[in-house]
Length: 208
Image (cartoon, rainbow, N blue to C red; front, side):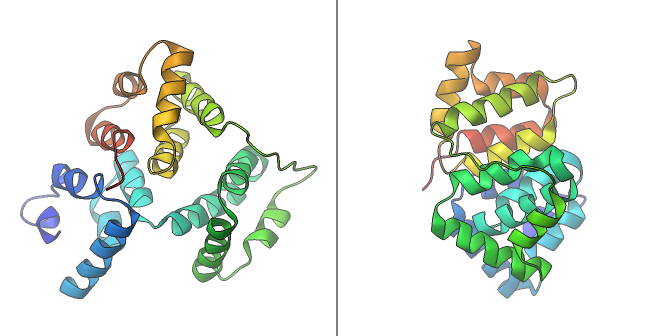
């Protein structure tokens, strides 16, 4: 991993090759091995070396699923009611064990209880509805994010990083059926550079 930061600048292509094709357990091992070998935090180094949307997608992907949910929930509480749907996504598409781990990760990172922050930062009625067909919901989020005037990179990054190891194939099928174009092509048409390459690598990701 040190080769990614060696020499003049950062090797973004190597970052994509190494991280985008590793499952959660393998990414955890990479982080641990990096810390042992270099006495550095891989996430902090990535944060320092990368920029813009590519930075966000790499960092979110490198986090464990529980850490990622904790981060997304925290960001959602900062955005008030505009991101109530992000809280709903987490509440309705994770197992009880995944939710428990997300709550643990949230408390470990922010020293607060997730449920208390959600209650404090949201107002009015906040219905938690079960998503019977998550792939249809996430297809819609992607479709609206991509077709929006100026792609909504936040929604695009969130859905790709959280669903790549879960149900991305079903989401891709739903997207193609609904829009008559593949998700790969839609992303390629609305993004560019290392950010585009990372997203495309993730939606083609197969859990090893």
